[in-house]
Length: 59
Image (cartoon, rainbow, N blue to C red; front, top):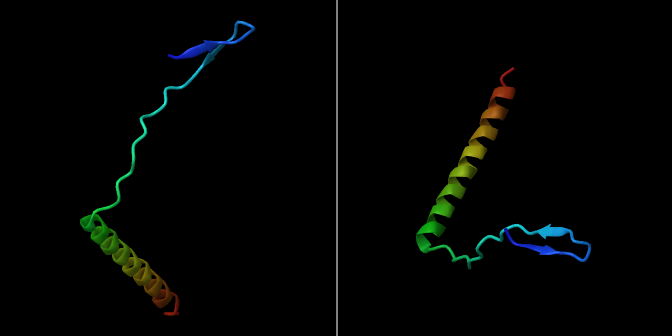
């Protein structure tokens, strides 16, 4: 573990730094999947909201 010694004899320990890398932009297939998941999520939420209002208006 890397460390340094200060003037008073105290040791400073440093955490190991993670490897840094450049992020790659999403491919066209990944972009298409993002759109599909987004639309599916919106349909699911809209359906749940519709179901909630339908059930609450039954009485």
